[in-house]
Image (tube, rainbow, N blue to C red; front, top):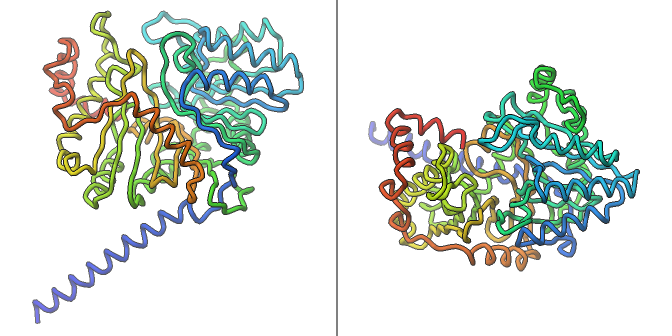
Length: 469
């Protein structure tokens, strides 16, 4: 009787667990599939595959703009490309005074020089000088997501030009726009969709520009953070509750698009979406990330997918394609150890998942093209659902920065030729890894890197560092 009792109880628990998992899965899928997206036409979508084309397309759209230009980026750099884009915006405003032009960049990032440089007005000097020079209607704002840049930045992506959303993870500078010899590769999507464009601009107006914490940073004297400190705290609280307005989405076309916001660890809809895309994959999950350092929830989901026999493809930048990589023939600084730390995390993952590589379920590619850098991020699920985002799929994006993303659902695979062409273009500069032995070990690294990583591990601060990168 005792054995029978425990057997029946075990069966009941097992059944309840299966039911709970099934219900959770259903809830996860309903999280985005049960809400209508904005209808898309394949003919109104364009996918670019290189930075030069993106640069020329951006300038072309600015030159043709009739009613509005909204730009959200981490920064608009005071260099040749940045000056060119800002000049184009001012000239567009002078040609059409009714054209609304608003630029939003990170408040802290805009008011410092590059890492290692002396203290200065930073890029804000360019914004102020150009406004004085052109005297146009262009307005540049600084968004203070956190009190200090280390703890979170404005990482929203997407430029709205009239009814076109130009979505890329790229900021505006010489390397992102391939102004000179070097480039930083990203993803570049153009969606001609008035409702999506309206949703993006409405979010900026309602949740950012309405806040006293978001000042103009193109007029001197620049407002110090101390004057907006209380307003910034209020802004941070409100952003954790904010969303993109999708109320105009009444269509349920097989090809549609939705916008998502992510900020903070709790109630973060973009994080929840990403986790759902991992967990509801039926055949293949393709991931693009410049920095290999998945948050724990995503790492667990990846392992579960592989155990279930699902295919996972990960495309990541080689350490030499990292923004922070410093060539051994140049003076070394501590920040240059970061690419090597990412590679150690990748090595550990490859070692633990080697059997799935051998089975052909896990495919990991390293991107490298000379001294150019890699900044791609995004998710393709089962050739039908595609997430374009600035989210790096790392702990920093998971809990510190404010992020957004656009999810394209393409059940009839109308965009397949564009997505496949993008993938092939990316993979053309990749090498496939057969296991952990295909990348360098700690002993292969330059002596300063070995010393820094060794010290970090000994005093156990490497765990803390991984939470911020």
